[in-house]
Length: 102
Figure 1 (cartoon, one colour):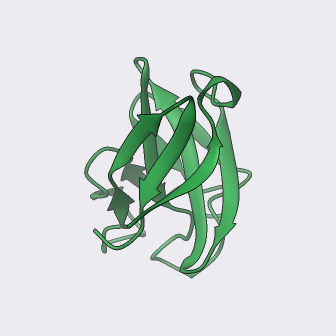
Figure 2 (tube, helix red, strand yellow):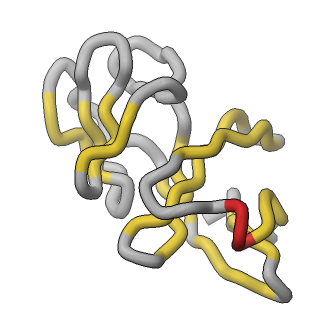
């Protein structure tokens, strides 16, 4: 079941926002007009990706520089070797809904 996390107009291109959910922290960003949702935890050391930055379609971990593709979740740079979770997003009535069970 999809859960509302934000209003669509709150998510700006290239900005990253983090939300507490029943499964942990989830980040939202807008990439080329599309809102993406992904796990806000680095698989290298379990730390938050909050405070990191976006480069193209990758989020860069603020501690050790690990990178993850925000569309696929794939780890793209060491020291991370495991993917992060990505979640389907839909928009209904201006609300950003994220399917945390997908």
